[in-house]
Image (cartoon, rainbow, N blue to C red; front, side, top):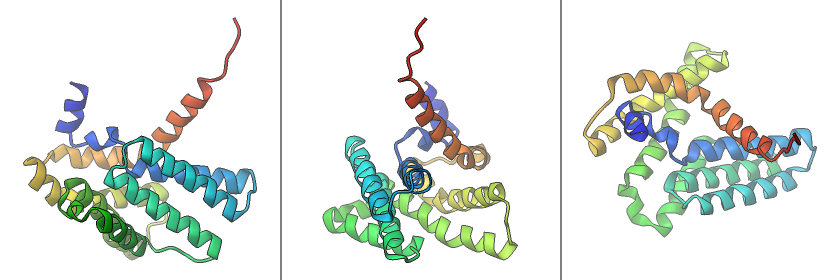
Length: 198
């Protein structure tokens, strides 16, 4: 019943293991290793890559998860080489790798939604932020969320035969907060191992 409510409101994707979760998790681990523990770029990249690859395998290797893993590994490799990674090029490499192994994924709903979301972030969202000169991180997150929603809307309508009108508004609110939700979940899991004797 709870999942049906999420689905009706157009935010069921928040409950799925997706590229968003992998991205947040992978970058968080990388930053902790690099900024807090002061490990080398190579060590940070290797540890983070192994962790997110294992996470992807354990979670079933969905298209969006594999896409996120490949893109993150490219980001880590760029850090080692002292180069900047481009989101569109990284997405292109990820799509090429996935389609080389599973060509029919091109017609999969998950593939289309995952890559259209990335295209929205690298294209319209980046353009909106640049043209309007948005500096505030919350407003940037809203611009990204709005772009992703509009870009994935036709695919959602085609595959699911419905569009949640207030789902657009809900996603504008919840997507920018997902980083904090995922990180608080990780913190809760870690804190659950602390035993306080009575």
